[in-house]
Image 1 (tube, rainbow, N blue to C red):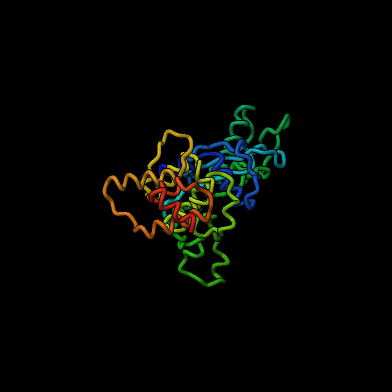
Image 2 (cartoon, rainbow, N blue to C red; image 1 turned 90 degrees about the vertical axis):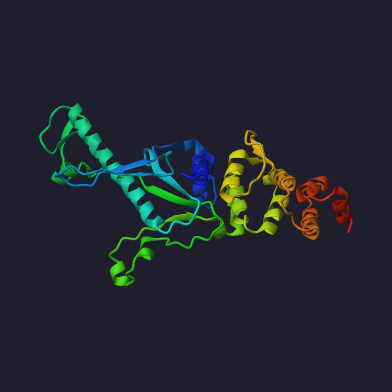
Length: 332
């Protein structure tokens, strides 16, 4: 597993980030999902093909992050299973991959229900085939219920999987199973179940919608979105105060997935991203790397002065100009 996969998978397990992503997806950013109600689950999905007869090899898959949401809903304590797949690049078979994860999770729930019924039967003593104990009475269940282990009154918890893209690229892969099929005849496709992915991709989020994120995920996605546009990125860092004290884990994610080579103390709780870039540039100067022209730096400094967020001293350090030059730009 590469460094990008490691840091992004760790990041999305943070309950604040996890809840924030799903609040954006499901509730337009409203804080409906309470992070304290999320509980991490084993991300290993194991499914056994149905049917009697010869022994069958199990299918095993590993999700990036899976949690269950607890809240009283129709008398059930746990009522929703949520999973996030963190992607550092576009995956052209994501619809199939997520469909397998979700199908295995539903199969696991069916098996859990069947096992619960078997265990209850053993605890209450032997019964005639097709008879189960419900409360103090023995109740006859249908043959189909008895054989499948899943009874008429059993219900499944819904599973929602979200794909979170940590890349500035536009997602140009299929969004559904139907988009992956060679057959396009709508009459045939009407009989082929479709499966669509739920996607959050920085490049495809409307600029005004970014503020619907309430955690550091907002800053992570914004930085990634503009990571290939130096001018817009510099303007963002100069004008957005959230980047002055960014959560360290978010800064590590940004640094890793964008290969920014930022310089900061990874032991600190927060990171000043402007300072991190200034120190990175100072390191580049010490290593003799080529910088931008004086005119380019002056243009950047002028935009930062107009934004009015940073002091002359901070701007001078950020762009690599003397304080005297920046002061001269300020009085123009």
